[in-house]
Length: 417
Ligand SMILES: Cc1ncc(COP(=O)(O)O)c(C=O)c1O
Image (cartoon, rainbow, N blue to C red):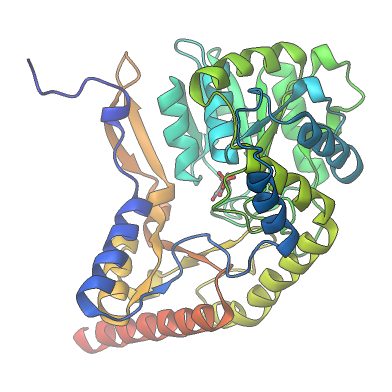
């Protein structure tokens, strides 16, 4: 039998994120010293005590059997109420599915929307999981360029689309850019999608982390449209807002009942159901959501306001990110491309960051949807991503080391020249 890998999954190159993860682990093992980890979006704060208690109580009460594939009715009802009151989204229990993390909800949603040969529009600078999931679901990703300010332009998106386009993915606040889209921008994107007959996937994992303006849920913009005609599928997470990354809990508010029925089939096949005690923890998190999300926002905002301005002053960051947990730092001044920069920064200073090309892969597909070759958007070659949700001392140490390293590289260039 041939050992050639013929599956779509086998053709997807591993992401830079995973490579840097492994490199940081190896560095720690070899040096015995802790790496300053700015590469991963795991928060330094924890879920509130009532979340842990609800989880433990559920286990002790024996609430450890399967739930229905859609999730616990009490949790779904609480989510529908939260979407109505906090997000202005008119959902319903029949259109709401709980998932083990929003990542899995996204994957199942993409599976349920994919048609043979269908294209999905993603920004050229994207969260790599969006690209990987699209490929795994059988979509042909089309990566549209962003403007110099890293914002999407509806005209550019329209030009990148084709008669095979089925889905436009929107992620605001965005990973990795920190860009937050305003009501006007979201309305323009929604109108374009409606006009062309596309679905919209709105990934709102960072809905509570906005530093300059309010969060707009895309689905709130179509709340007056009859349910059967709605096109926005919204994906939310407990991971960021409530620091529940390891619990694995998220949800998808489908645009209409037909889409929900299809996604239920995908979920039955994928997961059977979401962990039952985790769902009880989710109910507790929603009950105390205002305190928890406001406290967590303050912690990350303080990090942003205190630790990131030196990067702006050093000319490495255009402006502070308007939302999310990440900043894209421009290391052109070091004279190194982002991969070399990240490798040497880890090696010499013990600081882990992610090279920008990890977020800018452009795959070429064969007729079967397998990746035949790939390259990277050229302008990402001098960007590295840092996460600013980590503890303040780690963040400040990492930022200081990164600036020092850029200065050292620059001085080396000057003396060599
Ligand atoms: C944009 C975006 N969406 C979704 C997720 C997934 O979150 P989770 O699966 O933990 O809910 C992440 C995690 O980093 C993310 O950055």
